Image 1 (cartoon, rainbow, N blue to C red):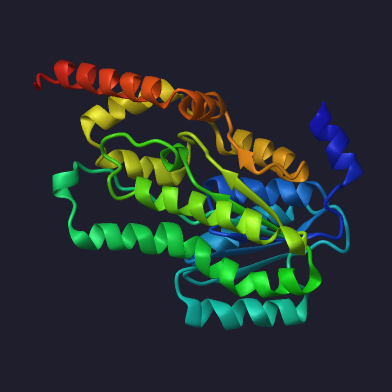
Image 2 (spheres, rainbow, N blue to C red):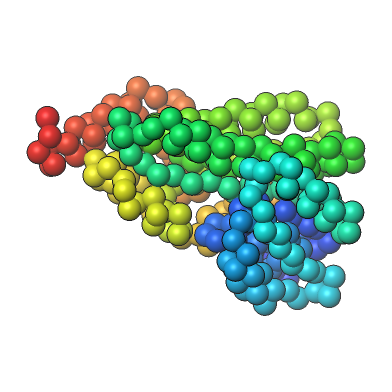
Length: 283
């Protein structure tokens, strides 16, 4: 297997990754993958107990004396608290080679059921939760002219379906940020990647599905469901190849179709929405 060959080669030996929002789901699997391939990791998330659990799980995969796993409990949207914590960590160890920005959440609703605070909370978490770590770490990347920024958007970052009125705009914003930095940071030899994961079997998706509009649930079923490990393996593989667009599973084909034939994608979405409403007895 290619994976086994990579584990033996240890391509991330001596490398450090910051995983912001990396205590569960895709983030935890990315930490495990990175460490298996020889790297060290700092995992940042809010809940101390979950962080400790993640660290114990990841530490079991360490195979080199030089490797380490550290955790920081902090809200990634709080610049005043996060900045000194990351800066102190960098002074003690070093600045990261990779910054994985995985922070995000979705609470789908009918648009008329949202209140303004829902839109603010989505933007704060999904956009600023990835922007703020970038602002803190980027000066180190620019000074040394190296580093790799990885952002997590969504299939809702290039198309929109009903139910995601507060979520999709934030994921479009993440794509815009990554596009700008990809271009602007070229002179500094800093790499950028943007990940568009489809539905993935994570605790976040479980919460997301609890109040998801029925039509949205029915439309989402056609997109399939990936496991966090599958997504992590694919992302790591593409990051090592310095790929900008990273689309696991069906997200890849749908993104290409949407780029080439956007009207066709919208036609399918409208058709599926109409079918879902008909099944629910709605006009």
